[in-house]
Amino acid sequence: MEFENQPAWSESFDRFYGYFAECFKREGTRRCAAVYWRGLLTEVERKNCWQLAEQMGEADPQPMQRLLYEAQWDEALMCQKLREGGHQPTGLCARGRPHGHRPPCG
Image (cartoon, rainbow, N blue to C red; front, side):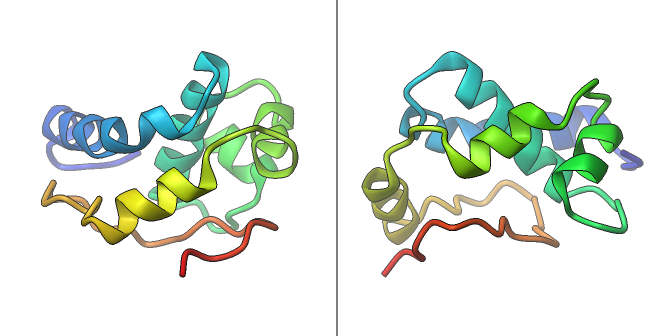
């Protein structure tokens, strides 16, 4: 990742992601989701698990793939947090969004 102020960006992302971390039951799932979300914010040309894993220095895309198709997380809590304003001001500007089989928040 090429950012002008990497430490500040990382701190802002950690605050932002921390708001949603409790939506993921397992620590491994929380870690993988954080890596996946960070990857979505990078300049990688294609936003698929193979490319994101490579960009983020992961040895294998399978954890990200499992995150999208079988990981257990609380979709209702995630949607509630988004509706409550989970997008607290952090200085982050998302350029991508996850594509999965989960229904959109309504």
